Image (cartoon, rainbow, N blue to C red; front, side, top):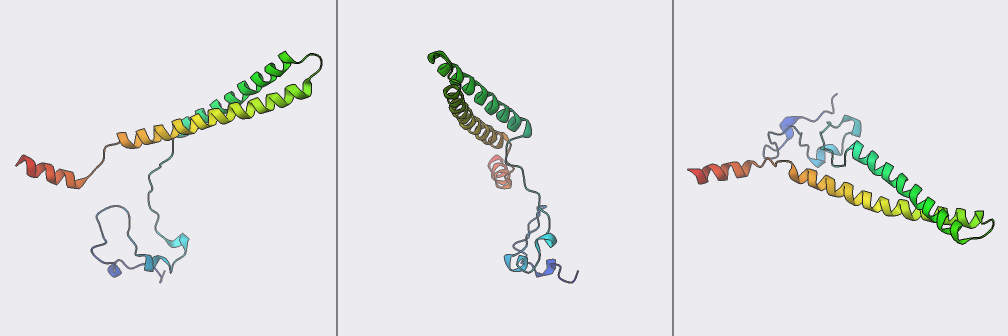
Length: 135
């Protein structure tokens, strides 16, 4: 392609020894998204198994809330109260699933933050400072 980005056009101060290419914004505007280089982005979300467990717990919380709502109305009503029991079961299911959903989101965010904090940081500046202190 004749429109490829030439590395000679880059400012040498912008180029680092990382695996990610640095392209100035003025060069990016001329090209289609399909022609831009692919960069590796670390995943910042929770893992798939923990998402599946959170989803399952939300469904279980909704089921339990619905059963509690149905039983609460069914015990207090005499005769045929299927409409009232159904409405209270629906309200209980929404409240139960919503509550468990809030707790699940908070737990997933805490797990993600804990995982990101526990990974060792590779800071080159600290190595140079440590070696000068040891000398």
